Image 1: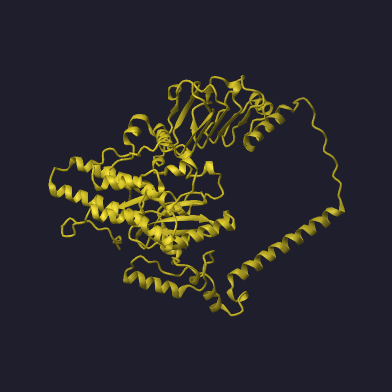
Image 2 (image 1 turned 135 degrees about the vertical axis):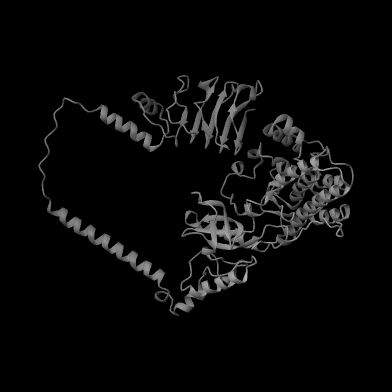
Length: 559
């Protein structure tokens, strides 16, 4: 059986023969979106069954090397930073497909151009133009006399054709100007006048739900009075949505936005850190825009102290619409980072009973907060979470110790992608520290997510909170991320009914029993998220009379 090795969004420094087991059956290697983009060398001489290699959005020092070039059927090296045309091994079969697009080759020689033409190598148009230019230059004969210019003949129809073209261009320009005037003049397209137009469209002139000072409210009121024309957006009218539209002038970007048509941006809204999820709606079809607006509407209904709150929506520019979330990328920590800091501090703190009590109280607050958020989502949406729950999708605000499940990734749309390239597909999760959160039934029969699979992922998060470490931590330490995920996949898909124990260091007790129940192989035997919340309250009662009591409520926004 041949195998495929796929690495996506991982850090790869080199690929050496000792990285592969002797006698392996790997036939297809895919390396994509390396981070950070450091240059690497690929020595694939240990892969005797290799037939396909695909590397894109990475940086290579040189052309990959392998043991049997004649067996290779396709080579795709797209956007890997090559500036010098590589030396193609002569042992490659003539029909081997080679793709070297998005590589800025310079100073191509005639032999390089001959190689590109003879092997039909895919390159950018700029590279092809270099070969055409060099061919035209080599084809000139310096001794041949220049041919005399032909005598120009005046055709009377040229003037008529030019006149007709001028009329057509003028008509198009006039139609464009009239169309713009109709857009900018409400009364020209609304019979009821300007007032009816203002009330029937979706103007960006509403406040958000963040606390505002008196001065800010007065400024916002004045801004409403000054608005004479609404900003056109694809957002539905006020009666058809549950969120606010924020004035674009009140949302200030923290940095210059990237060129990507979709993604997250850091910004400030009334001096408060927020995160924007942007969509350039002119670059997508109507179903994608409808999916974005539908997801924003769903997130607006998830009002819970342990779920990242949707502040509202706004229009960033002429083509960008944004969902605004109460999330600070500079101060809010991911749950893994917060737990690692907690583990380090617990080693340095003195063994004082009160200090340990405060630390354990904080852990209980995190566990109850995450479980309560999942139970609320299940009860509100009457279904599973849109995206898989992992500790990376949970954030902690150190200022008050509150924990939040971050649903921003729900806006991502993967319905148009193939299952094997989907970001939720387990095969592309190797080395990403998320495979342990995938329920076994989702790996064995490719079942869709259910509330029971969410509870399995919740059990993994509870174990991370209890141990301040990753699941199967010893495997990751001894074997590396990719090999550890491969072993986790084998354990989860094992036909035996052995219990899954990713946290062997959890001491026996109610918490260990609850985690084991969440990680049961049989989905029907797992508790519901609401039962998990009740069990946590019974196993870890919160001592409200202690002066170090931690808050699990909403965030106090600083003015």
